[in-house]
Image (cartoon, rainbow, N blue to C red):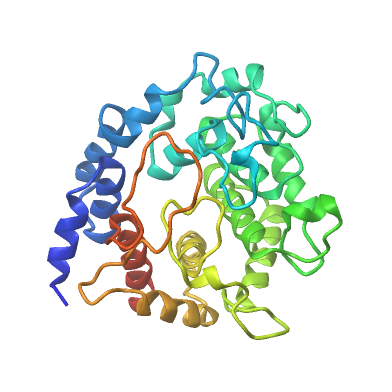
Length: 323
């Protein structure tokens, strides 16, 4: 396997959106170094390109979750086609995940409050809707941009399942939690808690959701002991809404660091999956491409070494191995 420095240099030869995170989390660079790289996102690379695509009304692609004029009966809405990833929520998710300074979107929260409504029922943007994942993204994006999303935070306490997690299909009558919905809900709650301080009630809900995944060791059906679905061990970036062992372990790393807790031993099986997926050259391959229209590609095609997956995989293993 090549030296760690070779892989690190390869990751550093990337867009500022990734480079600054490598500098901070893998190289432990001085604050002024990675902060200077992060600031460059607003004027070059992925961040600048996506900022330039924002509409005058604060949205992207003219819609909240889907582009304006999306045909819900057309080919893009067919099973397996993959929804477009160009609308407001997905664009905000990318910029936030990349670490863009919210000041670069000054006024966006107000514009979205005035102009953006959910395709599901026409509700105002910052009120959210009925889908756990959508509401989790909105909660995190609202906390990032300074919108008042406190009522949406309480929504997660009210809509938690009896088994501990969440399921976007609750509105269709589902009473069992979903790995996908629970992880996305946890990410939104953690981001909100870090940004605002949260509350004991929200923290208790977050910890309950974590227990749901930990009881299943991040991988398995509780009753069967078998992998909950095949793609749990398949890694792709961007993560979008999809659950995987890597996506989940990265969340638990963030939660552990925020809470000051040691890694939970229940994560060990997921860590083994992540470690086994590392190629002999020290990198992780893009294993699939989540289908759907995009503004532009931000990672490699399936089968090629992915700088983003290598960053996440390395960061998770560093955290686990130094516990």
